[in-house]
Image 1 (cartoon, rainbow, N blue to C red):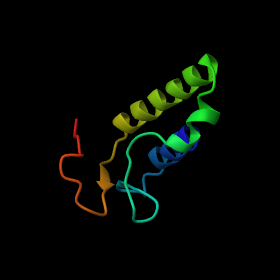
Image 2 (image 1 turned 120 degrees about the vertical axis):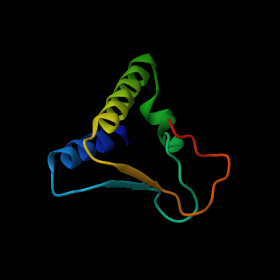
Image 3 (image 1 turned 135 degrees about the horizontal axis):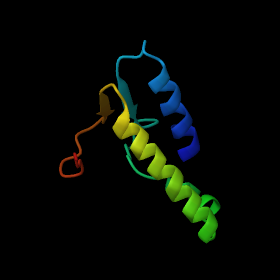
Length: 86
């Protein structure tokens, strides 16, 4: 998941015609701003894989922070107490 997000953010940052980035979950059951738990065993098996996954996630967070346009988290239902804005 992280490499795909990293690539999408790079493409977004390079396209000045896109005024804003909106994050949303797939479907209508949940919104999770963190990791895809279904990939933990395959993507984080062993210290090397875990280190690479963490490094990619850090690059994604840094790229997101550095984006020159606003970002919005579109949450389909109210999630009281679950949203942390930093």
